[in-house]
Amino acid sequence: MDSNSNQKPKIGVLLVGHGSRLPYGEEVINGIADIYRQDADHPVAVGFMNMSRPSIPEAINELAAMGVEKIIVTPVFLAHGVHTKHDIPHILGLDNGSEGHHYHEHEHEHEEFEFDGEIVYTEPLGADPRIAEIIRDRVKSAI
Image (cartoon, rainbow, N blue to C red; front, side, top):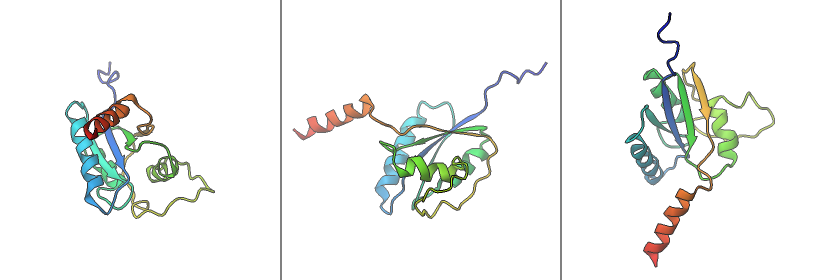
């Protein structure tokens, strides 16, 4: 009897940011990742769609090197748009070669990664009461 048959795959989390020529975007996404890591039971990496490093493929390779078998990719964007619906899935190889879509040209999109496991792509942050609470705090502090 195989004692490993009931084991869950080793999970990794990839938080995806847009990327920027300015350092602030990287600092925010890395700060969010640091906060998330405090209670995470799995490796967490950050990857950027454009301009910043590490790229999404580099971050996937980082997680793969840690032995993860399943990567949960969460775009740290508020809402869906062309990046979350087309560009990021394209970089992840989840677009099934969709023809007819005109993707934005991004410097990282032709990079490749080595990962044979499962990639699960989640929704962006969306209209969440926790985000509204942050807005309440900002408004209170400005009054």
